[in-house]
Length: 216
Ligand code: CO
Image (cartoon, rainbow, N blue to C red):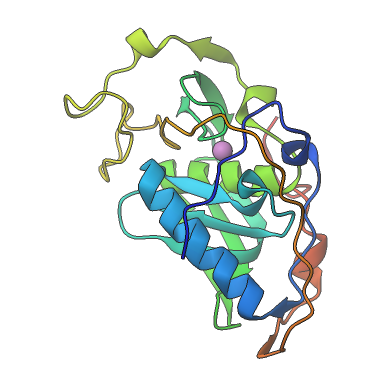
């Protein structure tokens, strides 16, 4: 396992559309393990593979109840609206109010190859939408209603900026956390050509996109 560099908002890879995962192999598992470690290190609420330079449809969300690894995630239902503060590990130190669905359902494949469904609301719904957006080259700054200054943010504890708290409240919405180093270097997307332990079901999830989303 290793901590990978988190790309910053101006890096082109973040603007590209990620490819679906067809086979969960050793490389996929290494990517996931590294993403878990990278996310934990950054104290974030979520991380998408393109943020570590890999254009594959893999995300992790962790809003304080433990990380959920989602392969080929796809929104299948959205309902309602919430306007909360959002941040991103690729956009450190910047925060904004966004409008997201209040509740969602999503399908994804877990790392054992099982097709899963999740229902989520509030912070978790926001986090899943945010991460799926990354897979389509979308950053929260594209849909922000208004940016907010860091001084306007109220965190639940005194540890400024550690947006990790598990409680869902209007203030803990500053989700993806801060930090991430600038740095350079360039990783490109991974090939998938090792062993084939699992075939990923449902080819549909591959097309994904956020067309089902009712945001607007
Ligand atoms: Co993000």
